[in-house]
Image (cartoon, rainbow, N blue to C red; front, side, top):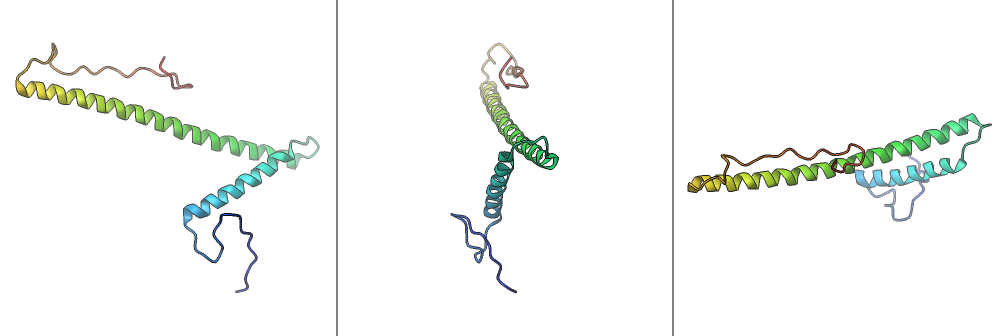
Length: 128
């Protein structure tokens, strides 16, 4: 098999050495982002429909990727809030069980009070 010329980017592993999938994906992502940047720099030319379509497609792809990243960050934030609330409820319940097992009054109620989580604005995620 003849040897092929392969471009090697700075900080990348030479082609003769095996690369892990995350490393290959990271390198490919960097190359793809550079290609998208180059396409976006072409700009929109009303007289060249193919170029305009290419630029718009690249721009929409970038926007879509950013939306997915933002959605993931927001989901992680909400998951963390839920985890903290569940821990608070479990701690309250454990205190209630401990008091009940010792025969102490339950503090005016038979069980811990579970309040509804505050409603949040869907766009900002802040409490209403």
